Image (cartoon, rainbow, N blue to C red; front, side, top):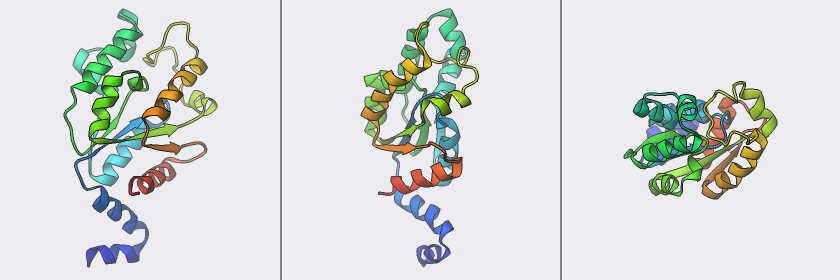
Length: 189
């Protein structure tokens, strides 16, 4: 009876219906470039589906006691990628939304762990919009070679995002709510 009630209400029905369908222990993992909205959309998605939210960049910073940029400055970007792999392969969570760092896809081990009990969602955004969102490219803690441009990084990573994604969401020209609604719809099918 409650389900029928929500079907009559339209908008509320949608979120309740997704909760019923996705009310399992599976994780939802968000991948994509820095600035694509993984953390923002991830938090909204977690609330919508009543799941826990984790941000692997925050977990790295907590575990190693340093910001991502500090790790790069004191060691290098490859060390940051190794720390990222250690954190991700150590995750033992269920019923969570996980926003990964943009470089998570470089590690086959990490992606194998994440894929076991998760839907992998690629939030796609093109370079011009990403550059509008990232104002601190040199200090944001992006795991990249010193001489690598943002455009080079994008081309390299885009292939990996597409390789691992179960679902892709084109975020171009869309607001947060529109992206969330599209993602919720795709997760139910």
